[in-house]
Structures are given as C-alpha cells and as structure tokens.
Length: 217
Image (cartoon, rainbow, N blue to C red; front, side, top):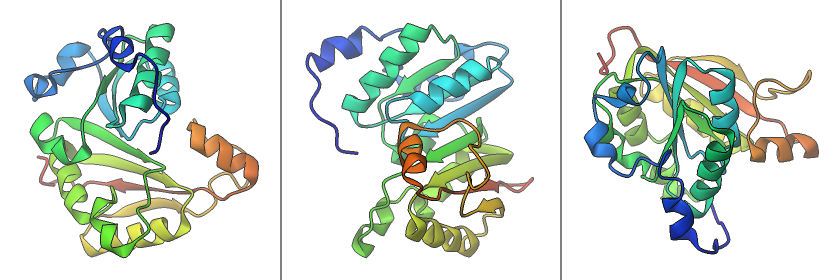
C-alpha cells in the first residue's frame, strides 16, 4: 500500500496508545485479556484505514478484533477512527503478517480476514502474497480447529491463483463467488471495496475452514 506521508505521524500514533498494542509478543497466548469474556478473536491482516475493522467491531461487540497493518501512515488513520468511535473491542498492531506465529499461540484466533491484499502481480514476488503457502501455514498455526479465513479481492488473477494455492496445500474452500455484489451490496465493505463496486468491478470472495484436527489444535 502506497500512502502519502502523514504530518506529525509519531505524536499521532502515541496519542492512540489506548488502542495501539506496542508490545504484541507479551500478549501471546493471552490476547483475550484485552477483553475478558470475548466470544471470539478475529484478525484483519492489512486493515488499511480501518473502515472494515471499525464497522465489524461496532456490529459485533462480543468479538475482540485486532487490526494488523505494517504501513503506519494507514494505521494511524485506523487507530484515530477507533479512538473517535470509542470501540472497546478493537485494537491494532503495527507488525508484518510474517510474524503471526510469534505473536499468537497455536489455536488462539477464531477467524482471519484478508481484504484486498496487495496482489504482487510479478511471478518473482509471489511469495509476498498473503495467500502464498508460507503465510497459509502461519494462519493454520494460529487458527483454532475449524477456524476460518475470509478472503476478498478485486483482482481476478490473484483470486484464481489463490484458489489453486489453497487446493494444492489442502485448504478446504467454501462459499466461492466471482461477483459478491451481483445482486446488491453484501456485508461490510472496505474503502477499496466501495470504490471498486462503484466502478462496477466484480468482487471475488471465498472462505476457508481449518480441519477439525488442524495444526492449530
């Protein structure tokens, strides 16, 4: 994600300390202490400016949401949004998805959202895609048995490639669609999604469910 530089970025980040988890390793295995009684723990990897995470948190007050975004110019906007809305079940991490297994205990998360991830279109950069098999293995570790991955993209080539990657590495896929909004808007949309839908661009989506006896057990 390319973002313009934000004025006073560091002070703005620090002003969001109530929702910014700056020591994520210390929470490994105990994330739900942020919200005792949370029914589930959901992660959005690449949360951007935070529209999807904030709206999901507002609509699901019994679920603990963590927005993960390594681009701080985007993350600060997401955190400021959460602070303004005073959402007690939404927090943010400024980390790379490659660190997931170091930050979450096996089986700790219930669901992962991958919304409009960078497609990295050049073949030599395939390993950077968040649906590449090395990332899939990390998701398998941190998700509980029968935990889910929800994947959305506007990029038809990335979607087709990802479906092949899921199949090759034994990730069962369900609810596959190549035009999510064909019959009207479905679910909460990200900023990117709203833009693509307005342009008439089809949105591709699927869900992956971990096996009952998965590695996250």
